[in-house]
Image 1 (cartoon, helix red, strand yellow):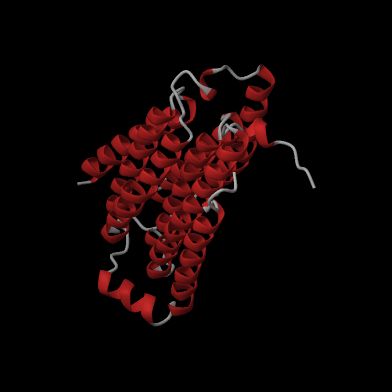
Image 2 (cartoon, rainbow over the protein chains, first blue to last red):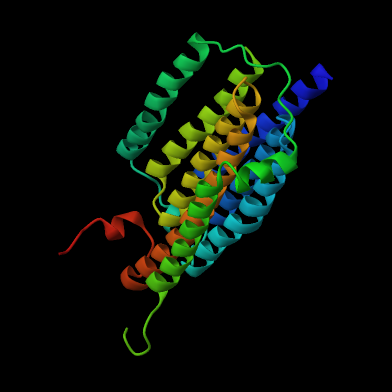
Length: 169
Length: 102
């Protein structure tokens, strides 16, 4: 079982590496979105490895089903062509700045993770989905309600921002 | 290296690549994709910390659910903003909207 779990982890980690690099470096935005979807699916696999199946299904439902469609709409509505905005090369200075922005937090945090090895549990805790629902409606009721208000405000705000009055161009 | 450390390293990798993409991308949609990468990494980190330590596992899973809800809300709002920018500036490049006018 140990070997199986490690193999699955390595497989998902590989997909995450490849997909995220594709999502960032790809010239075509549609291909970048495909890379992002691969990363999201592999993350759902990681959640299954962590014994959190409910989160894994929510990940597929919300991210792969919802957010990726939204991003696809954004790509479609801005008419991003494969030889358009992203295809023109970036300057060397921008590349160096981007590498710097990536390496500084990555170096600091990875040193912290490697230098302070937290033992952790060998086997993840199992939480019943019923316990999650109970927590959402009892102890963590306030965050749950606030999230619903925020979702409503975001939807209403999105409609308000994108709304254009007729005749006013 | 313990399992917890490995999961945290994967989450850190997603954060780093997302930060790189945020600077590297020229269009707003590309920046949105990088942002989603970072949010996904944060979710993985929270769930791993909840599941693999002696802490409360329920709060770990629930906070990731809330993060997902926030990410969905933020994606809709960003889609609306991208639409407005595209209508007004005839393009969704970041350099088009680098000037403020009072």
